[in-house]
Image (cartoon, rainbow, N blue to C red; front, side):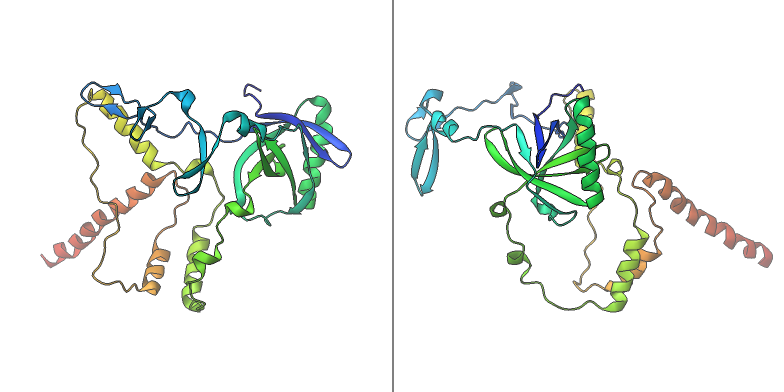
Amino acid sequence: MAARAYWQGQIRLALVSIPVEIYSATKSGATVSFRQIHEPSGKRIHYEKVVDGIGPVDADEIMKGFEYEKGEYVLLDEAEIEGVKLESKKTLELTQFVDVGEIDAIYYEKPYYVVPADDLAEEAFVVLREALRRAKKIGLGQLALRGREYVVSLKPCGRGMVLETLRYADEVNKAASYFRDIGDTKPDEDLLDLATSLIEKKAGKFDAGEFHDRYVDALKDLIARKRKSKGGKVSLDTEDTKPARGGSNVIDLMAALKKSLDKPANDTARKPAARKAPAKKAPAKKPAARKTPARKSA
């Protein structure tokens, strides 16, 4: 495997130890990043570390400080911070198993692919993978990575497994504080039936490839056009894509849902152009149908 392993160690289940390697399952290369540039010279802008009333300071004079009250800090040097970092252990012990779907999605942080370290580890790896799949369980444990300890989950994924770091309870805001002002009213059954029908009409299997970051695509297109124009101005698409606002805030929900159900369902997100074409041709056929009675009257 060409990629470099993020972590190498073993997964332990009771007395069974399985040598594994984990690899980052995500990448950030799709994003577009910018740097601040001095327009007259075209050169990058740099920043200096400065202190109010003193000015620029040397890097070796800088320490990290925790603000325990306004303007008051506890200073820590790098040696002190390094001293409390946890040693990266080479063993992930599975200490608990929970049902698939029991962990709220808000706790999941970052995924990693898990593979057996060698051919000798493959048999035990496959046994654990299939046992988790058959039991419909997710394994939980704690793992120290780069000085910090994480709660992690382990579950089957195709031929391999996925390890995901989880947020601690105190890192997640309680939903109740945000949802408490939402009333306990029951929805109208007719409206509920229409909304359910609309959901079922648009139901399908998830395919991540059908979705694209349109903002990133537009930025890349803008950058490409700016390069071709050698820094000159380029035309921007000024089409207003925002929904039109009416004079009233009252929405006829029943009419809106019925109108939504009358629209043809999109089979995939990849073929918007193929579905726009028939809609444009349809009005052209109607005038031709009206000309026939006109000839008879003549």
